[in-house]
Image (cartoon, rainbow, N blue to C red; front, side, top):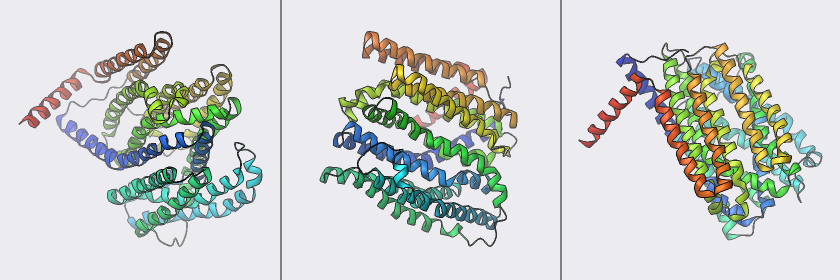
Length: 501
């Protein structure tokens, strides 16, 4: 095992500065994205009380479908631009790359969107059977160009570290949409169609605003000389992103077909609780991409990566167990006891998400080496394993079988991607300790469920609290060596006494 060494005080200072920069960007860029997503939780109690369980599942289905379709049209271009944006220092070249990508995305949408519109009657037959499903699908299609512009402008503002404008876009879009949802639900007897129309109107406003905020980076591309190299990088990423975005739609489709519309609503409610972990993951991911690529050429980048891995893995394991303590009370509070059955999906989905988020750190070598096609193997395994496991487990275990299938897919994908990344670009990861930490978390998570089934909710909570203590103890003992523990203690003492003064 290769161990990262940071005995040099000067190196320690540099790494602490980088971690501080990552934390700051996580709080600004990622925190803004997290807060904006959290606003959608404000409407969650209103939606679950306004609609039946089945209707809530249908609304969630169409919202997830819009996310999948816009990801399909972007097709990895955001990742390609991010990778090559940091490859060149000349802003004229960067403008060319950015503009070429936007033209390609809009051209693809202009070609394919009319075909989807004309095929809406046939495609709606593949969706849940609800009145007006064709028109609901068409509203989703109308929203796509503006969602694409929002995504494009948010990424560009993030890459250029334009914090104020990013805050306006990321928080503004969701806050305005959530506020309009809340107003409509409280004041009027709105249905699914009216809420989708509100989402469309909000997307139009912020899609236009986003392009206005980034217009200084846009030029009229006279040629497409960077397109070939970007496409070679983007096509595998596009396939991966499309499969990743399709999977939530597939999960809901299988839930509706295998278990029924009622369980679809319960599954959708459970995913909203898991969104609390998703907020933390999204905050980190938003900052991690630009940060990791901006330092990858430095000789000691591996040491910084390893510190991020240690701290993030321990943090995520604690948060997953803590969320499991709060899952049932949150569901009862935010949704009502009609959705009590949704609690069984929370732990499997949350730990799967945490493991995948951690693998974004360990598979950084794939992006650095520009061998993006390697990600395809992990995603193909992810989709196949998830589909097979859901089909095998759902008939016997119901909703929990759906969630377990997703969790297994995440784990297999994370392991394969990390292994391939290490072969493409070796870094000093401490895999054994990270696996031990997640293994301990999984054990406590499932043991607590069995204990809760037999001895009640209080026993379940105490088991999870014991799990949190165990994870913190193991994290302190395994993830940090003796010298690292001493430096952390010294830093904390210095910080404490300085603050006390």
